[in-house]
Length: 294
Image (tube, rainbow, N blue to C red; front, side):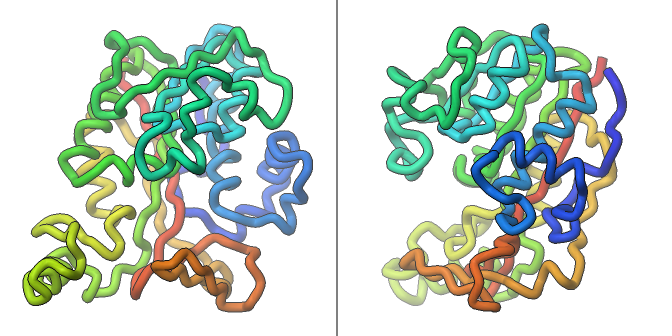
């Protein structure tokens, strides 16, 4: 297995979209879009996955890859044309994403979700809870999860998913995990504050808040939570030092997300769409490449 040729353990940054290799990969994955203008963190996650798997020699017919919280994202179908086998797992047909990215029809007719032709014989789609992966130990050469871990529940539930991902990896195998991480968490968005608001309102506000669980920005991890509930529980080796800094220009178009789903970009233009403000805090995608020891 070869070494990584570029930095993957990092936060999404506008400067990444000036990388010719990243732009080339995105043109391959999303040929209908111009990656120079279509700048958003989800496609950045696709590129991080594709480039890291190429660096590590995983894009060949011998590789067995698992997608956790895979939904019906196009990177799933893209991989089937480049690796030996892809297992896509999600709670298809249930949960908050059932109507968007994880419809039940993926279980019976995944081809209806495919944006292009793919090797149907290489794709297995299964309903599966990420906290209880129904695969034997050391089953996969690589596991990936893109912006899903933070949606699996409280800290203890994320711990379980991280351990399961590590368990099903073969010795020397790689996990490429992307998650929504808070680059700037306002003090008023801390869990104790949310819990106090719940108590004062007699439970009518911030109903899901707990002593260790935020309500307003619950579905995003702090850097400390990323370490304590993803990296450390997995027992996997972080392949590069993690860099959570972003360039000043990346902050120019923070997009405010309101509870009703309305989005308000700072510049008035949707792109670049990299930083999202929820209440008083700001999040983006962070990529974490991990390896299981031999």
